[in-house]
Image (cartoon, rainbow, N blue to C red; front, side):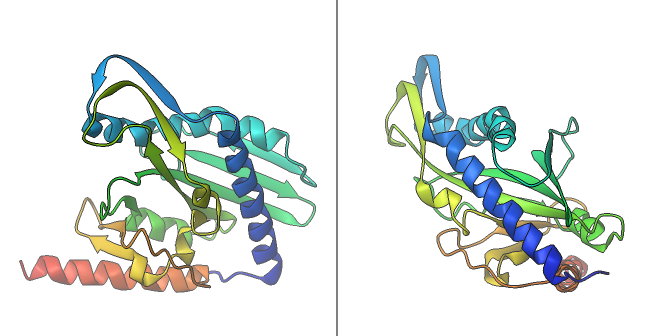
Length: 231
């Protein structure tokens, strides 16, 4: 298991800053929108929103990153497999190292509260953060807060998804391993359990190394296993 050297931390911080700025630029000129041939219900608008925001990011982020000043190379890769942890992988190769950010886009309708979005598989996180061959990889959450142009009780054929500015700050784009324990809600879903986001309106970040994150995940997984054995 590895910890993080000061140089690693510095590069990760620089790469996160670039991603935050680039994602903000993606939404500056135009908001994601949809035009239907029938009136959409508030429920349909909400369910469409997450996928629409994800598709919008995948279509625009590679271009924005290509125009961003960086002393090195930036590579983008969109995985073909639906089982990948990330929606897009961004690799930064600089003179002092390499960082690969696995960005998972989580669209959140601000009209809905207490929804506890699914963040990641505990098993897959353990595989990633235990691996000696993936020490440059970091899972990054883009918690994109949006507000549809229509109220949930109304219907409309044309809908815009207005993304809130706080989506691009440190509590909107962050390392998964930096999320506070009070925001991590383990659930008995799938193989090995899932991490859900709790208290989405009070996101707190902490300084936590890769090895400390592994220890936390192991504890959460053990807790879930004990819960299963008592059922």
